[in-house]
Image (cartoon, rainbow, N blue to C red):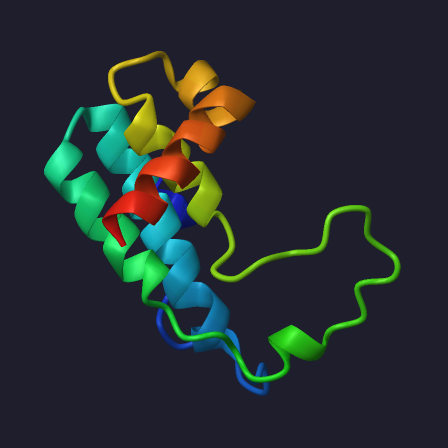
Length: 111
């Protein structure tokens, strides 16, 4: 999982790398924290992910070809589900619509 962390500086000529790589890294760190049973680190990564600025142009992407339009920050719903179902098996916490729904509701109450 740690191999999924992207370097802060991307390939030459790849504009916007940091805009997407750094939030991705927070998602990865949140997942690692969940797997290691570290709720504090999970919440810290969630907060950093939630505060990731939207990349320029993200809100103007053509969404006509996708069934579920992407939201920003990406994977925040997944991380909220990991928090809501902390202590449950990863497959359930990651893949359960129930965990994501509960996580979304809890996040709205707190933030």
